[in-house]
Length: 386
Image (cartoon, rainbow, N blue to C red; front, top):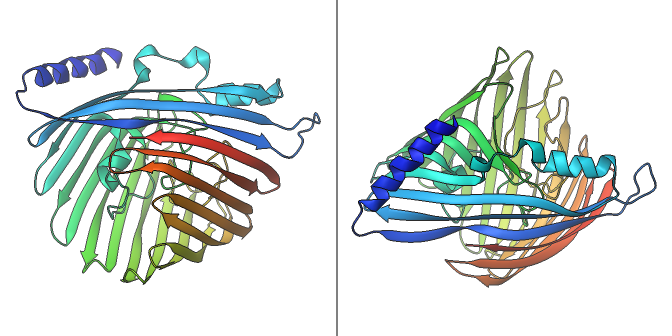
């Protein structure tokens, strides 16, 4: 795998060297977060740890073709107490030192082609940036997979219907993959590894239907090939967006059927209202079948239980969960407050101040409080993105 990957890098380098006029854009982030546990463990100590992560890269464009390279890394610090908790952080939330491969520091090495109707990208790349756009606001049905990916993705676009596809061989993450959460990608780091068991391969494809920018219909199918324990998911999203700048409503219905060694299902409704492009409020409810949980490499929930270091399984077997939220979204200030009940309980209030926020860079400091089931913690973070 290493020889094949390094050979691809050499080919990309040759293409870059032969280019004449090119555009250049940097991307990435550098940041750190800290979790202050407020409840004692069995040994009487309060768990605390910090994480620092970074990703730095660039993309060179030559007409419809662009090439990108980047490196990424992360490490924990100030872990207390030692023992089992320290081992969990160092070898669970972060890649175990003995498993680190030097060539896996390379987070990005991709070739991308964009035309009016068709886009394709291959290599190691940020799947979220490809489908969601740099601002994360491009509407699509890719809800269950995000972040850094080694594989291939495409979009075939028309005015009303788009077709997309994903093949993934390995992924890299910064502790959790939950796009849109304040202060994410700071409290863990895992180098490129398989998505499932053994020599796994992830395939997903779907269609996005746009009716007057008000109704979106997004069916999809996913297949995970993994050493005799294959998994199939089929589902979709139906979204209704109405209103304007003063008041808007966004209603999202999701459904999924999953078949593996056991079959299960998910249905989910989420409602958000926005006033004056500033104040948001709403709620939702979802239910998971009793046989087994939902496989989800990423998710679009509003929760913070796994954002700052705890691997909460929101979609475990038999989970029925309701939630309500309020928040503010401003160029220089963001706030999320959420309360959930039944089988997953969370109280969270997370905010950040954007000291710099323009089309090129964003520098934020923030913090808050998260109670996940019965565990309380305060969090603080700073993050510079570009």
